[in-house]
Image (tube, rainbow, N blue to C red; front, side, top):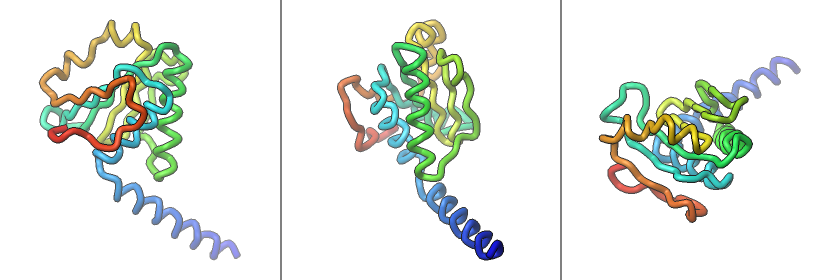
Length: 148
């Protein structure tokens, strides 16, 4: 019985890996953005940093109006991506909810408490990157602009 269970676990693990590998960077961005929108993230932008960075392809930057909202946005992203078998390489700052950094390999998400975002102004550091702004009124993003 235990050998069979191990075999089944092996099959399930392989299926999760296939799902993970089948989702490309843009699809991962859409999953993250929509999970953020679901929790009412503000001032959401997508930066394509492929040509400027050796460690990732996309940045998603958004804000929350409170530390709890920042934490809720982060939890929503983790929950949605986990459904696809995608786990973060690392998550920092979740406990305090002032600046949560989530590393999903080809997508890095920065979720800021609004005053903290204004102070660090990291968009300025990547100002040469192609950028897509997602309006606060958007309820679901179905595609990413060309060039992003």
